[in-house]
Every structure is written in C-alpha cells, then in structure tokens.
Length: 360
Image (cartoon, rainbow, N blue to C red; front, side, top):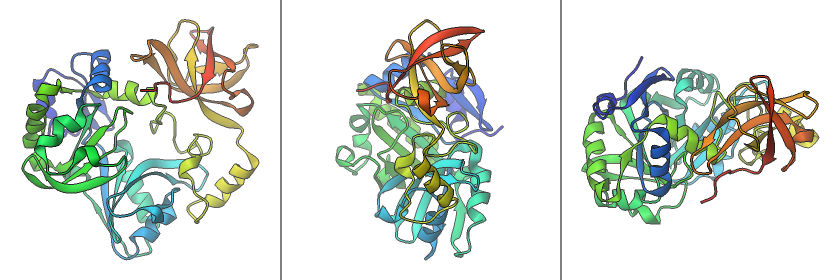
C-alpha cells in the first residue's frame, strides 16, 4: 500500500486509516457527520494526494485530448479547467477527469487514483501526435480546502486574489512561501473552495501553514468518509460506483460533457444513443420509509419487479434523511415516481427526486 507525503500527519492526528485505491488514507478523524458539517458550515482540509496527474505537452496535445475525451477542450483558455470523461470503445467510461489548460501546448489531466495506470495506457494508445506525456502523480501532493470560509482561511498565504477566482479556473503562484503552486477553484463537495497542487517535498510545510492560517476560521482535517457524503448530497458521480466501463455518459446524466461538435472515441455510438434515447438512467432518490440504501441493492417496482440497482447511498448529514443514486429503467425515472429499495428482502419505499439533494 502506498502512503501520501502526509500519512504520518494523519496518524498523529488520530485518523482512522483505511486502504483506498492502493493508498493508506484517512477515512475519518472525529466522525463523518461532524466533519461533513465542518465543510458545509466553515472549512475543512482533505488530503487527496492519491489522485493522478499527467502533463501533456506539445503541438498535438489538444488534438490528443480532443480524441480521447468527451467534452470540447478547444473551448478552454489558459487558466481554465474542464470536467470531462474518457470514453471506451463499447459506450462506457474509462474514467472521469479534469482537464487544465496551462497554455496552448501544455495541459494537466487529473484522474482518479484507482485508474492512474489504466488511464495512462489508454491515452498513450492514442498518442500518434508525438505528444510528450509525463506522469507526475507520485511526486505531486494535492490538498482540497473546502467550505464557505476557504478563501478567508487561505488568503494570507498567497498573492492570488482567491475570492475573485471564477469557478473551474486556476492560477499558478506562490503559496505558503512555495513557488509554482497550482491553486484551483474546484472541488468535490459543493461547498466551494480550492484544490492546491504542489511537490511532495513541501507537503508538511504547506499543511502546517494552512492549519495555522485557518485556525481563526475553525479549520479541521476531513477524511474520505465525509468526502463521500458531501459529494453524494450534490449528486456528483463516483467512478467505480455510479459510473464505470459499462455505463454510458448519457445514461449517467453527463450529456452536458458529451459534445458531438467533434469526433472522439466511440462518439458515433453515443450520438446514436442520444438520438434514440437510453433505456436506463442514473437518478437520485430519497427514502420515504426507514432504511439506508447501499451500493448494489436492487431497486424494484410495486410488484417486486427489478427495475434497477443502487450505485451510492447514505444517511445525509445535512438533510437528516437517507438518499441514494441508482440506474433505473427510463420509464420509472420521472421525478416523483415511487420506487422501492430491496433491503434485507424487504421492499422499502422511496421516490425519485431531482439532484442535487442539497441546495445551499
């Protein structure tokens, strides 16, 4: 199992450590609900250094990205970030990722930890543009500082005007006395904030500086448990749960990042799917009766007929109710439709609702 540059910090803070995507990661410090609330109401720090980062450089960098990703990266400008996905040849998703345009010939791709090798090999397989590819994952640390007080907590550490940064943009600059740090107005919580990329050697220095600067704002370390409940309240997909090699971006509600103004891997099949419609859809639902939906639980109709499967579920700390996401037959996917989750052979009533579940 790999460690991040901050693993010892987490252990010293009393974190409960678990294996995740091949890394030894903190799942919680004082408790998921308390950590969740910290991010929603003030500010928290996640060590997400397990994520993968690739640099693509050269004249053909954009052409390569356009070939393998579903979104239109030609719309990017220097300092802009885009959410996208890598599509496979069967209509499914290799991974979802972020594309950062550093300049017109230099891009950074940020991919999921469990897919680093898979994504690298997939992209490299299409690299007939002689693009220079560099995997910087093992030497890059990433902290997500999330919550409504994130900008206030971090502003004393940098000359970058954090409050003025637009959503899904980034800047390179000096941060906590370290040069060449990428500060990105992105995150996976729906609570606002920043993601900060830097070389491993500065990890402890930057971690300590963030906690010192954020102390007046009640900053706390946050584990992966709360990251999951926060993202689920927003209806954000988790690769391996809600999207995978067998799910199409159109089924997953990711039509907004699937642009047919250009050709990309298997775009013809997906365009046909868009025209003809999909037979199943990823929907959000909330429980009406008591019970917590879990990954892989069956979704059934009133007669007990299986109409889908739960992909993610939890007791929402913010809403104080059980919520979930799952793929169901399109005919049952309309908002307000009554469905049932099979929990220990019992049909437990739920209803389809619009996402996000949580609205600030």
